[in-house]
Image 1 (tube, one colour):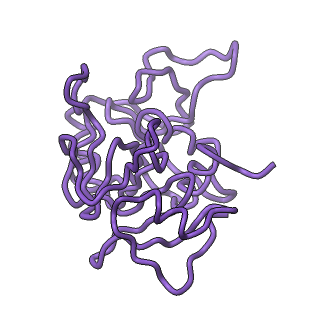
Image 2 (cartoon, helix red, strand yellow):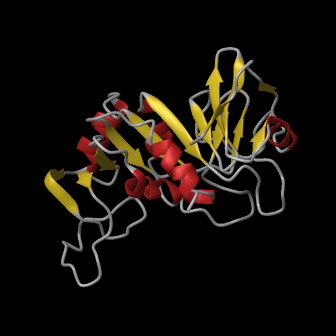
Length: 219
């Protein structure tokens, strides 16, 4: 069965990872990347609350330490060789540029590579958490997102309208429709999903897209 929706997004995002990468997977959709790691690619998954080596939720009936949790507070297994530590150490290596890839969701992303993913004015927000550090400190930042919100409004904008998480830090946007690369020249449409046309992506994107002579496929 062909991949679609969030599974397609997660599968394509996971193919950006390189063997041995230290990867931070944000709350929500990014955790699906664990189900789509390519053969031969072994990554170490970090959580900013103090662990390296998360390997996903335990199977039903499988015991694991209830104090080992991911960024959302969900219990996770810890692979052999994994470790736990304090927040001081965690944010030290995040801010020190040791995270190869940070994967997060988004409310909005814009042409300048700005990201808004932590609050909507008027709604209760727990706070930004570690997102600001993870976006600024990682060597590559990938945003996993549906292309439009539930009302059909584009989430990839000319300019973000919501409070920013970070400015000019996004490298790639992966949606169910396309892969978009933030370059010095602007947002380049590099790939489209099977059955999706360039024209459809453009029509559902407020930001201006640079269309190369050849646009690849997400699969």
